[in-house]
Amino acid sequence: MSPQQLPRLLRKEIKRRALSQYRIAEDTGIKQPSLSRFLNGGSLKMETAAVLLDYLGYEVRPKRRHQ
Image (tube, rainbow, N blue to C red; front, side, top):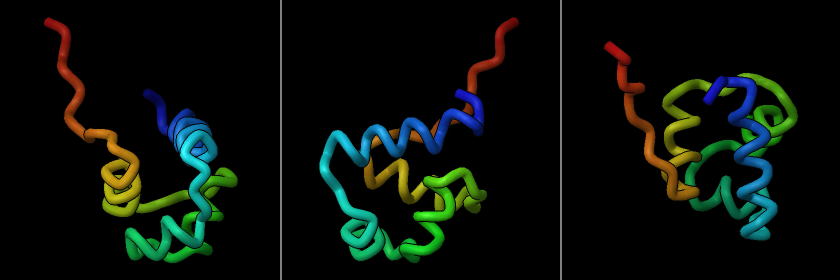
């Protein structure tokens, strides 16, 4: 998955679960303005993205190299 696809994936998942940015911010400790900025195309630290992905049930792992 490319970094450009991540906000779209997360927006879709958040909508599917009917989660508010406020609820996510409360549950994860991610500041709501940071979450909003990211979901609207801004940047987010990798550590913060990992917290958000974990909260939504996604696993972050290294990509396997093809040999």
